[in-house]
Image (cartoon, rainbow, N blue to C red; front, side, top):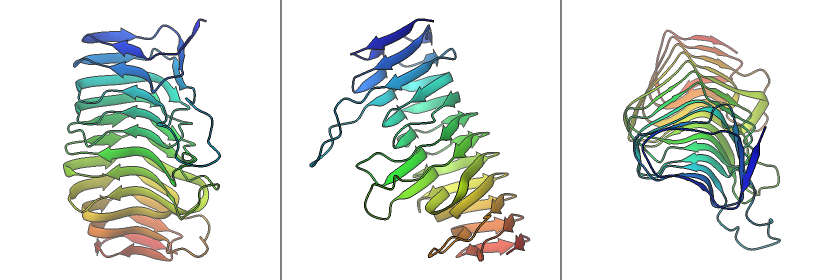
Length: 282
């Protein structure tokens, strides 16, 4: 199998279906840069891997880290069927619309699996976000960042997302961050830490969001769902297998409604939300 190593990004400048024909390793600011609308990028089962641009400095600020696939400003971009790893951010698409990520493994990226940049009309389906442990100069590790309006996030796996121990400060690990807009649906996903971890959140939503969180399983998070916005949290399972020391472990907290959820192992099942017909076992 051919393994292509490049010092410049692979550029896609035309609409249509584009397929990788080999693994791709790139030492550049971006591994793949999409410059056209209406692009269907089929990774074809191959892996896109970033090489670090610079060694970790002994002091001072870190140079801009590499991004796996960049589709900023683009419309109707699909990325599917492969792996993007070892990048600061596996996928980034600021100011984009109508994105689809399907069957992509974003495991092993350094800070963010995929950054949607508040893109509207996004679908993220059947992807894996695992072992994202935080960039060495940042205190956060995020699976799916900046979900915007009219988005659907379904049938994905979010596993062991937490900050590196070498980063000073509290830090957080978050599965999904919803930052703006209405009509966001997060359903049928599995969020899990192998062991209970403080400073981790399954789903976090900002105050100007309207999100349905349903039929998900969230295991070993300090807070399964945390929201400042109008969330409907229904028919989910929240499981904490072991106590978290020095933490305020809550199944779901924040604005909105919690109904027909099963909560197991949390000292506080729900906080600061309207509660109906939940099953709670401490």
